[in-house]
Image (cartoon, rainbow, N blue to C red; front, side, top):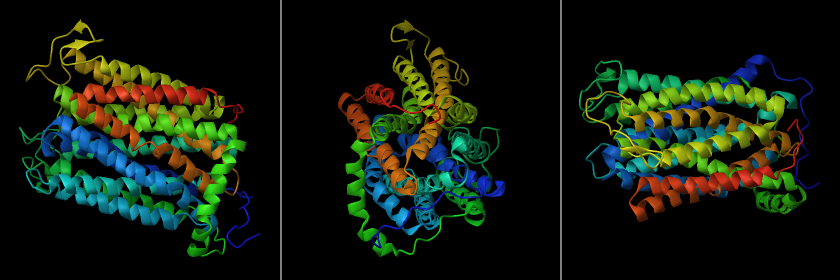
Length: 465
């Protein structure tokens, strides 16, 4: 055995206490505001409506930034995961990439409307924070198999996602109720002026979603560092682990044909996760461009979607342990396909492509038009099934990965979720640019969901997996 190939770490003989598992679950709580506030419901629509020259241009720029971040993650995830396996502990990696999340999110405060540097600052901060959040999540996921027995992995993953959604919900409620105001009225969702002296006209409440995300992560990730046990050190230095990393990754990729179910699952995950990431990245921007929704409408939409997401993730974890991850993921994809087609059938003055409907009228109240209400309902469906799909995919990977190489294969899992993530948003951006239509951009996602489902359907797994 070479020094760069440490022995596989044996499963725990005694599982960690409840407080250690609870602290690990709060990683999802700590990281979720980045995805809720920045990538979906507050900062992304603010970028499209207040920083970019128009909604279509904003969707395109956001897509290119998302794609670039995904490419960085795709290129490095398996290699870094393998290095972490060979050195042992995951917490130092979570701390390092968590710092990137904090720095990138904090930068968003400086994206001031009207400033010549607002767009590059916003995009750079978003890319840095995305890389940090995704890598920190990869190494956090690699701790799963040392926290609970295999038969409880579905519960662990689903509960983590549900707690994460609750964290996103609370952070969104704080933002909408106390910080972000309608630029026209100067009032927040609960009818007060923004606290902390935030200027509604300068959209400081929307921009404060960045610093809030950073502070939230620092506070709530701390229990995991203090209470959750980490893997033991292997004795290899970082340089020794890195020296053999490229060769080990090459060997692992060459080994995948001998593991056909695992390889097919990773390919399917690569495609359908890409579509889901793009759907969430552009959902708020799409509503802002098509219906003219502002922070308040988007925030209420986000709160309702997060409520269904919390319920869906919790129920999905139970279904995962009962019927297996594959049926949960396939059912979720079917619902997402239905939702995408439904969204594409909407415009301000019709539903289902051809049925006329009265368009929104200024002053007619929240979600007053039929197309808006249909969009709201489809969004709630997306929230209900997105959590189960992601949680079931994570637990399925934990069950399929070879013991002692969990970090390496979760690196491949992150790779499979990101290697085409630069393609999905980029294709959405290109279609939006070419056709000057947000609907054309969103149509790309239907192809991704169909391909992912077809691949997953051919994966042979046991009922327990």
